[in-house]
Amino acid sequence: MPKSFPCPRCGEATTWENNEFRPFCSDRCKLIDLGAWANEDYKLPTEDSPPEEDS
Ligand SMILES: [Zn+2]
Image (tube, rainbow, N blue to C red):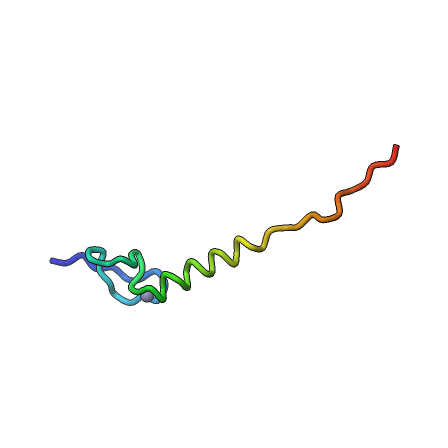
């Protein structure tokens, strides 16, 4: 009885064993997910003008 589960990206049924793209069903779903994650990570606040302190 093969263990199958829905791909977290597209919901397509896939298997854990012999699946190099797990937990996704395909390289496309894997890349989409990683890409989305990376894009989120790139939204870091930039601080190119530090506050000046006059005293
Ligand atoms: Zn998928």
